[in-house]
Length: 348
Ligand code: GLY
Image (cartoon, rainbow, N blue to C red; front, side, top):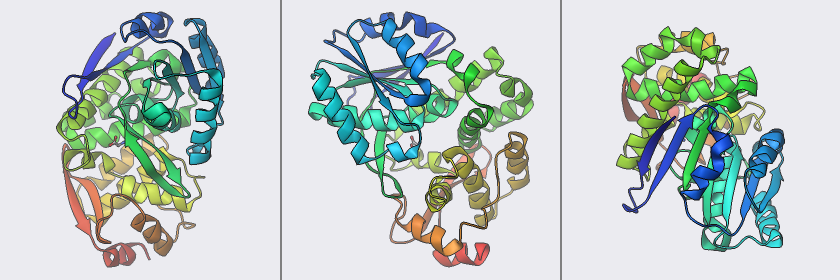
């Protein structure tokens, strides 16, 4: 097992250990004991991983389970209220620990509840998807959607620890696994050309979930993200690089009414954003994404004007200009600004 420490830039004295390994969930209580004394454990879990949540509960004393329906629709204020009411009814206090078990939707939602319940309680993320392990659970961003606007309401609230156990990935459906790979490819394309090459060379082993290669990929992606967050926690400079594919991707997700899932939308978004910026390397990127069966073309059902309106409600837009993060060359990300005319010309 490897532990990568994320030092919190806003509170120098605190940090989040990110434990990455295989099979260490059976020793969960040891990781929790190191975090301090808690008067109760509340396991918030995606309904799809109920068995995992029950297993986790069996390793802890005084553990309560709260289930959340799968799917983006659960990232809502309504769900926040329902969970907070359950926590209250079950007796959660400021000394309780919330364990968030699920993919990115669940850790975003659970992190947000933890940031607000009694003005903030501790939480631990136990991601059950690759996307959760390499991206959503790292860096303290939490939030819910408002209508179709993704993550409009949120807070920065770092988990006390992240436990990424790749054994949980063995039963993850292939499509969801590949959606997580999209985020791994994104971070490599923006920050580390050698890592991108490693992914290309080892794709078969990665798709076969070969432990040593998979662990190397997760460790590398997490350590790159940790460096970014330590340098720019609040999205002012380098953290914006992690939005590669997300400006158009979030709009595709919203306009499709979330029938196109996050990883697929980001895959489409990365190619569209590289094309808009006239960058070299589009074919290489397309090839890599097609190899993992991810879509690379904006579907006809997403009309350019509707996408533009969705992008203009996004947090990343400043004075109507579209700010996109793209790899100028692989491993060298940058932020560029595009006006809406350019977008409409290219996609109408
Ligand atoms: N998922 C993008 C970020 O954490 O900044």
